[in-house]
Length: 506
Image (cartoon, rainbow, N blue to C red):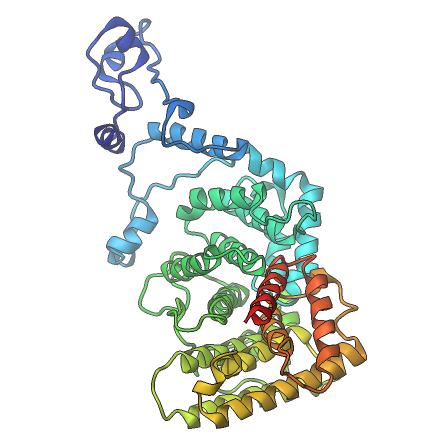
């Protein structure tokens, strides 16, 4: 078996061709034609064919669906191709100076778009419907794809033959598809198709591939698919590094010529930072794939300006000096993600005597929360993200069974913050019903963590928070509503049921 794989990797077929085997000729198994068949002069020159392995007789094969059978067939067909191709990604990793010194001729292979991908995408009208749905819902709170460039370029039928464009369109289809009530498992055929196709297209070294990967990671995070979500976000971070995004020492894989392209790449990096921090919010201590943002890193510009593609140099601001007037939703979310990263690093540290850092984080989060609430039209996605970061700061002191082992001052502060958040939830979620009237497709998954932690505390028999029972009921209703879009809400409900069972059995 190992010898056969080695021969294939060296440009040889695992077995003799059909002509040589039938006539018991010695076959050198060369690809695409063996030596004997290649020596035959016209008109006797014949097609050299090799038998393909039968997947049904392979003891290591676990193909269970038409999609996987199609991917297996494509992989077998690719065994005919020569493997000794020097492509752009290989040069970027092995000797990038070649690209600085002059032009280098590289081989670029374009993978075939499988039929199942084309079937999922549908016609131009269906593709446009999927795009409109994405930009009307997900894009409103996660705007890392240029709306103008997307509609101007990738909605044109001439671009749909590009595998990286097809992959991004397929990822849009995935992230905008609601879970089916009778099929609660989010690992659908569409999900597996996107994952398979991603592996085929990732070598094209395209920003669109990275954007598709971010959408897949967001899908996995929002539907509670672990450890896939954690691993996919790590893969996105590595892919961004490979493309030269947010790195200064590497040769960029592609050149950007407009401010819109520069802004889009920056937003892609911030999207990875957001997901990288949030995926570890319940289990701090794991290393981040994206380094901590620097104070001189630029924040995203105004979202409306980005959508229109009318960016000017005056729109830019840094993390240390954000513009207070432009109120970019995505920029505020990036700042909150930066703080969440500091919170997770703080709570996972074993160092003692960090009261100053803890107080500073608490005050900064409170200031951000106050600023987010003190506007005519509060951004609930950003507010719930800040709530989650604030609760993450107190989680070690809110967990049952751990409170007695920690400093009583921290525990008291944790209780005060819990009652403060409960009061705000009572005023907004219960009193104004600001959330329950929203379309589930417009809701981000950012608030689910803090809601889960608050519910866990309010379910304790000893808890006597003001309006606690009313808030608990409203949060459980919110989980039910969000589960229409994000399956992880159902997972949190099951975890709360498990916590309740444990507390009653204790």
